[in-house]
Length: 359
Ligand code: F6P
Image 1 (cartoon, helix red, strand yellow):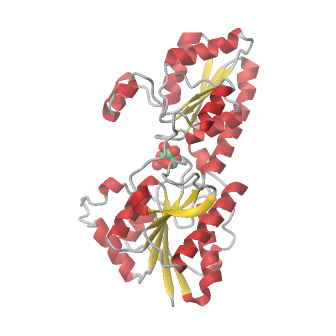
Image 2 (tube, rainbow, N blue to C red):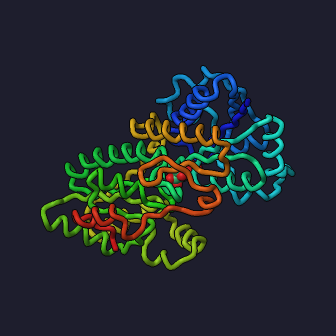
Image 3 (tube, protein in one colour):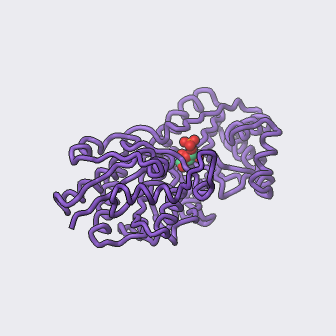
């Protein structure tokens, strides 16, 4: 039985996308031999809408294990716009289904985060054979303990915090490092602990600026003239926690403050009198080669996707469940976010070594 497999990567790039693509391809060629054809879909769902497809050869998947980004290119095509007809008059869902048919695909593999999984589920409900693979440095996909890209980003963010210690200690400064993660604080939590941050601020635990300042002052009183704050991009304070998202955005815009780190740094400096600096590594956290951990994880996930194809098991998202590679139904994953629970063991671990969350 011949199988023709379409693969796309959607949403923000991250380390491990190519390693996963390679894992899928290698496992498929190994399993199905000449009975498999792989079609690379360029630029995510946008490419699927616009039939931007490339017939892949086995050799195309060689030498990509260590390469960052994605060989297929990626694009953000928000789920909320999938059923909206815009200026180009394109019925997006219909166009994606047409490409699937035109390319004579037997199945579609979608590598991406929460938005990608929502659209994957939509296409599955529309009758396409879809398998999702969990990618994101945010580690916030429901139903999987880990996503590929996360551990590499933890390593990079940890290295940033390590390096900031030099200036923080030499100058007796407060350093605020802003870590990506708009909704979930996993990356900040893990890299904060690994990098020895003194304070960790995540969206799941709204902070009180006075408590953050007190934590810095207490350290100074104990002879530590510097403090390092690992702050998630999406952090907000206890007052903002009472606001709706739009209201929060407006109040920030009115105050002329753009990022969580600048907001916190200004207030901390004013409250403590200690010289404070900000560091925003931004997309560096998503750049470069995947770590050994992510290469292994990506390979395991890719192999599982090939097994699902062999079993004709579609409408699933590959996942790590109880340390075993498995899968969840796409419909169960779509539309949910895996937040850091307030009583998460890692939060408690941090608290137990004196890290403040500003609550
Ligand atoms: O979802 C991954 C992520 O890196 C988030 O942590 C971050 O908020 C967002 O993507 C940034 O997106 P973009 O690269 O589109 O600016």
